[in-house]
Image (tube, rainbow, N blue to C red; front, side):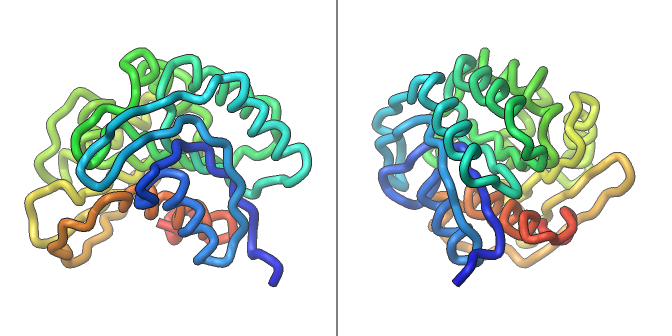
Length: 233
């Protein structure tokens, strides 16, 4: 069967298979599209925590991106874990050399167990340079708080944080509300023209490892198939 679309995933590997590039590939494939990858780091982890992180060299990451795109042109690019400032610089440089401009950024910063997955210097480059290149950024609440230096306790705070990200250059923002202590989950989509609040009943489960990766990859896949961005969310 011919895939519906082609997606390039730039992200880290998760040895447990629940998150990272493994979750991304499973999601894109399940939704009928074709997944390509550029691996940024190899992590040893499970659902309880991260044992170790080995970064792939920036040069090797760039080679993965450019050589893949030279042959197979992605419809949309999804970016996940970018561990260091040099990795982010390499990814930005590579993005400048390819034609695909539809980019979804899932700013992976913390593992489920709390381990930090990105350096402070890398975060500053993400905020000052990378965010301006992406079509959509999809932070969860801890990530949105870290990026905007605000505290988020409700949907109004989520909208406020999203607007800060817009001022930094983001075109569209989806703040995910799964960390709020509420029976109803609220995700907030904000652009310069509209605010949409998605609501659903919260599922009580401890099986949340990789949910952010899965959601952002699903959004990327729907968007790559031609759905409008807000409907892809």
